Each structure stands twice: as structure tokens, then as C-alpha cells.
Amino acid sequence: MRPDLSSFVSGECHLVVRQIEAFVDGELSGADRLFVAQHLELCRSCASSAQALTGLGDVLRGAVAEDLPTPEMAGLASGVFSRIGAESAQSWRGLAARAADGWHWAIVGGGSVAATFVTTAFVAFILAFGPKPEREDSLAALIGNLGRPPGMLFLYATPGGDGGDSILMQVDNGEPAASILTAALATPIGFRPQTEAELVGALANALTRKGRVVNLYLMTPEDRRYTESLLDEINRLRFTEPLTVGAAVAVHQVRLVTSTGVTAKGL
Amino acid sequence: MGFESSVKPFRTLTWPEAASADWALVQQCAGGDEAACSRLVTDHQRMVYQLSLHLLGDPQEALDLSQEVFLRVFRTLPQFRGQSTLRTWIYRIVVNQASNRQRWWRRRHRSQQVALDDHAATHGEIAESRNFASPDRVMQQNETAHRVWGALDSLPFDQRAVIVLREIDGLSYEEIATSLGVAVGTVKSRLARARESLREALRTEKAAG
View 1 (tube, rainbow over the protein chains, first blue to last red):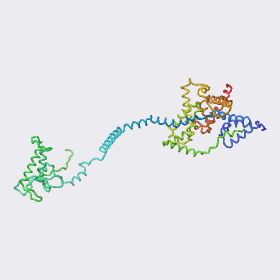
View 2 (view 1 turned 180 degrees about the vertical axis):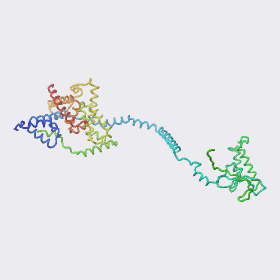
View 3 (view 1 turned 120 degrees about the horizontal axis):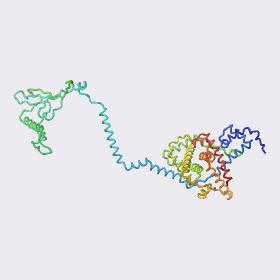
């Protein structure tokens, strides 16, 4: 029989008592574990405490040992997943997804409207904050203006020298041709002269609307003047010699119609 | 002496291996892998159910709680950062959910509480042993089980949780501390108080029986 050496080790008991639970739970390491184990070999009181702790755990584990309810456990995963699915269907995201299914045209329309607004805002931004057009009175504009032709140059002259009828003519100096009204009044020099057929065509266009003859009393004064000028020009072409490039003309008047703007401050 | 039997068995899975396996499983679940989600439930359902049962003491409540726990796990899975093992993280969810449910249950149904014997008469024996021991032995086991369940039921929830996690689930102090969100020192003191209370309750039950 093992001798009771409790009296020899009782001085250590107050140290061991604090560590018995950690010892039983396997939470002591190295030297501490060895120290408690050696003490328990010798001290009946502490050994009994440790045994009680171990026994308590065994009783607990033995008493609560449970068989799992197999059918219920087998359905646990599927139950969890169906609840997740149901919750996800009821969530805001799920509701939004379902709403989006039936509202795709509304979404398309909304997107188009949004795109229109974005584009409008972009254009407005460019207009408001984009590069400004060059000022007409700036030096760069002035230099650019000097390089361009001064304007439409008209002559009031008599072809073939003095004695004939004087007519208005436009000189080809790089400027675009005069407006149709002015062009009808002026015979271009250097431009291709209009033929009688072209003038008759223009007269037909002026006198008809959608295939019907225009009532002359309802014409505007401007249209009437234009029509009359076309008739005059047709008459002139019929009764005057055709003007050829390089033919001599007697110039009576030179008229310059310029588009150059002149601004003055302090007037 | 039989103290060695209480030492936790050597775990063959190292921490980095467990952590990486947990992390991989969590990533798969978070990515919507149904097979991985199913595996997560299968791997942990026994642990979750048993802890729920030991904390609540009612099989039906434990099943409901298990479902709640896994729902919570999947909802909060993206928040898992791998700072503890997945098992410990799930333990924490179980304890929190059980604590909430018990608090709610006590507040709402305090008047409807029934005695353990009445519950056993309605729902059958709590610890139905399936061994083929003699009727006397079975009866004795049932009596012990009733006494233990009664004693466990008498413990405050925090003491009950700590002793269940230590004695039944075999968690270390550190794992218990992580699961409960308390310091290791708190775990030790709660465990000592729980053991003392349990021993006292068992003594009282035995004397009353």
C-alpha cells in the first residue's frame, strides 16, 4: 500500500488547488503540469479533488449523450437553404429583381430619358464653358479679314463700248456669287453666263407652286420684282449680243458691296 | 490514476491546415457554391445541434435553433475573417443565438414553464439510451440524466455555456473565450463557479430524489 505522504506535501496544496482545474482540463504545460502531477501522486486530498472534477465531467458527458434525431438532421440543410431562398425572395434585392422583370420597358424608357438629359447637360456645359468664338474686332480676325476678298464687285457698264444699253455686272474676284435676285440683275463677268433656258426655268419655278400657276395679284412685291427681273433678263438675252469673256466694256460705275464690319467705339 | 483520460486528444489537423481548409470552404460558400454550403451544414450540424440542445435542454428548440444558427452563419459568412477557426466562430453564433432565445423565451413564456418531469412525460425521456443494458441499469441512467439536466437547467446561462463548451464539447479555455467573447480569466472563474454550482445542484437533486 502506498504510504500517505500528505503531511509532507501539504505546504504545496494551496499552490496546487489553484491549478487543479487547469490540470484536469489539460491546460497546464511543461513544468506546471509535472509539478501538479507529482503532487497528486502524493496528496490524497488534492487527488480526490481532481478525481471529483474528472468524475463530474464524466457524469455530465454520460448523462447528456444524445442520439441525433436523424430524419430532422437530414432535412436541416434543405430547410436552411429553402429559408435562405425564401428570405432572399422577400428581400429588397429580390423585390427589385422581380420588379425589374416586368418593368424592363420602363427601365429602357427611363434610361433613354436619362441619356437625353445627360446629353443635353453635356452640350449645355460645352456651350457654357467651352472655347468661345473669335471676336470680330480681334487682331487675328482683322488679319484673317485682310486676306479675304473685299466683297462683291459690281460694274455698271456698256458692253462693246459706248452707244449700247448699260447693264449691271458682277466681277469674279473670289467672292461667292450674289444672291439670286442680285444675280438676275447683274451679268457676271468671268462667271458662266446664264442661258435663256435656265432663266426660263427659274421663271417657271417662280410662277408655279406645286404644279399650279401662282396668282400674280397674290405675289409679294419682292417676288414680283424678281419675276419681272427674270423677264427683263430673258428679253435682254434675246435682243442683245451675248457677252463673251474678254469683250470690251465701257465702265460707267464701280460698286463694291463689302461684308467687312467696321466698329467704332465712343460714337 | 485516471487523469490522463481528461487530456484532450492530439489533433491531427494543424492550425494552418484547418485555417486554410476553413477559408477555402468559406470562400466557396460565399461564392454561391451550393455543394460547399451543403458540406458546411453537414460538417457542423451535429456540433451545432448538440450544443443547442445542451444550452436549451429541448430537442425541438435545439432543432429550431440549429436552423437559425446556419441561417445566421450564411448571412454573416462574408464577415468571417479567419481570425478563429470556423468551428469556434460557429460556436460563438450558437451561444449568442441560444442566449437570445433563452432570454426571449424566459420573458415571454415564464408563466408557461413546466417541470422537467412533466416535460419528460409529454415529450418522452430526454436521454434515450440505445444500449441493451438491464432495465435497472437503464432506469438508473435515466435518473442520472434527469438529475444532470435538472442541475444544468438550474445554472445561469453563462455558467451553463462555459461548462458545456468545456466538458461536453471539449473546447480549450482560449476557444471558449473566443466563442463567448470574454477573457480567458473570465472563462476560468466562470468554469470554477459552474462546477461548484453543478456539484451542489447534483447533491441537492440526489438528496431530494
